[in-house]
Amino acid sequence: MRDSAYLYGPVLSRRLGRSLGISPFITKYCNFDCLYCQLGPTAALTNTPAQGVAVETLIAAFNTFLKSGIAYDTVTVSGLGEPTLYRDLKKLLIRLKTCTDKPVTLITNGARFDHRDVFDAALEADIVLPTVMSEPVSLAETIHRPHPHVNLKASTVYLKQFSQEFHGELWLEVMLLKDINDSAQSLRAFKQTLKGIRYDRLYINVPLRAGTDKSAQVPPLKRVMMFAEALEGISIEALAEGVYQSAVTDDYEAILNIIRTHPLHRHEIEVFMKHRQSDATRILKRLNQDPRVRASSMKGLTSYRLKH
Image 1: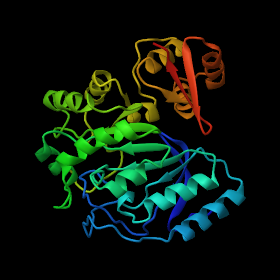
Image 2 (image 1 turned 90 degrees about the vertical axis):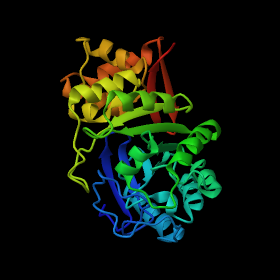
Image 3 (image 1 turned 120 degrees about the vertical axis):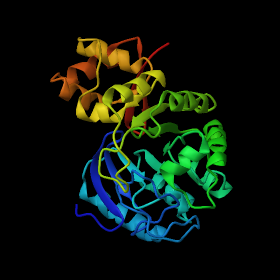
């Protein structure tokens, strides 16, 4: 299917498999101007909600896509900027869920959860992927360069509250930048922040593509893996590129070692096995038969985790 200005893909996502993207804005509309943003600079930084593309237009485009019969794993509301600035976000998420039995995902910087309408809208998603802010706040401001009306300190407080009320899957993201927030001090700060959040997954991310600012550089792999191990998360760079380092040579035991602390879904396992030149089908069959493994499915997206 040919992409439109607000519907694109499905694209192969490192986290979500075949992800069909929906953007409620046709030009970048954001309250951050992040150093690492692959969309380039935010020309008009704003924290004011806007109408964007009409919900009916987005739903019509989605229904047209469905008629194509193209396979997809998730519907992801993200796109050009910050989707929580979309005035009709709650309505869009609810309508999408009536059109598909696949998970509806919201990718957000999480900086507007202190607005109750945004908070309530995000509760409608099946999966929410917010960013965990670096501490102290001054460091987060250096990285994300937010609109003056954004309260980054409050965003962490409300993310903790959101995690208590949300009934879907909360997948957190920590973005690491070389010599900016990849220090031992930052690691301790992230650990402290995460203590108050109930979440299902934690991804350690790095700027894989050219961003807004040349200072946004990729930390050494050793440092990234140190964060992943210490925070009991997983490096999605490592997973995507097949450079995840496991001391376990047996493929199946390597997977068990990962899912002991971090659940993986089918696509992630397939990518990991591909780069180890192993048979993912065989591994998935063993996981489904292993009494030590808990397989949970949400709208067809199956995740595997080792029972404790």
